[in-house]
Length: 403
Image (cartoon, rainbow, N blue to C red; front, side):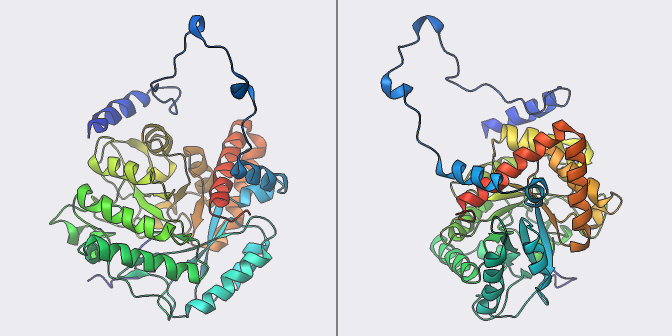
């Protein structure tokens, strides 16, 4: 997603490229390379001790997920895979979505409402949720992209200016951001931006550089700053979203406004891709948002949102990210208007995604019905949905939304 109209003011890398190329003709794009220590010798296997034979203690997160799943019918399970937009000018439609069991509500637009007023609404949603508590999400980056601007929300500089701060000042700013959002009941920030915009190209990079949304012009500049924001949010129980994998720093146009936006440069061995992998594996467990652009050198057949090569083979397989993958907006964005809404949701989940984000709530019922119908008709897709629901609920358990 983008700001409102014109306020604009590595050793593994080579391996990734070779592996992704090899997988393009493979029958199993999820296959991962062997890791050390997996082989065992049958002739030298030690005797099992009594301690080894004892059952391992129950995992409290798994127990919470299992309990939540047991209380959800199939429709309610699938609803957990959607984050649906509600305009900040009138959040009352969120009541209906939450009562219907939606996975999350995205506060869309801009608001000068005070934090306590937002907290009253998000608290109402927590109390009224029939099952797992919903994610309450906002776009709180800074600069031109700051959804919540009223009393109780510190005005944030753009990322490019945040990146100029000394590390201790950036850490303090990130901690304040986390505290502000937590005070309003926001549990998911669709930030920070991890895209790398090369120096001198900012003005031509419509979605990121033109608004100063980037933390720097090299991965070495971006990674520590993005990590500081992720950690500052996590310190207050707010989940971060690292975006937009595999990067929007090399495109000229914006996928929200223009179909067919293409990055002709990025490959599996690009430094920016490796940087996303490093950030995604943070101990703070951020989400990863997938770009809606097309990357021919990764997958010439589909945008990243629908690409199994990008999401499953590259992000989940070789970068070893096993957490929540969320789409960019697939409801109102120009990138997807030629694809029926139901197909957008199905194709994203098929590619390995977890949470479908639609800023337009009107298309949510069609998306939900399409996923349900496909899962009922296709056992293989039903297993894909099962895995996505478990990933989504695991993230909620780890964030305290199932307890």
